[in-house]
Image (cartoon, rainbow, N blue to C red):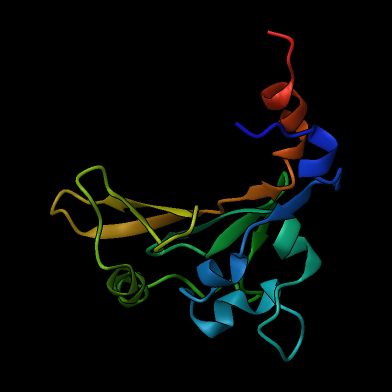
Length: 149
């Protein structure tokens, strides 16, 4: 057995919030994610990267997202409503839902929940942003490698 010392295994680095929100935004039509990206690019804004909690799309309603505690409409046009075709397009990109009406993106922590009508058709989507923190293992190294039990 080889003995490790905590200070030789992990450098004490600050936690970094990671979410890869671009993958979730790519499911949306371009006019709906324009508020979430920097002008003229597909690069998420600082708010979208760190404050975006979820995106809600319901047929016949305005698309919106939650940034922290604030609801933000994804289009300034009050007449721009989500259509069944848009929901179907997103569902086709996901490859469908499980028996619990949830789907995900391959190798991502994001969760997409579908709301179905009585016919079983998906008429609404709630897309929750999945996040992880890089560097949190450093907080456990002294516990895992310590001799105190």
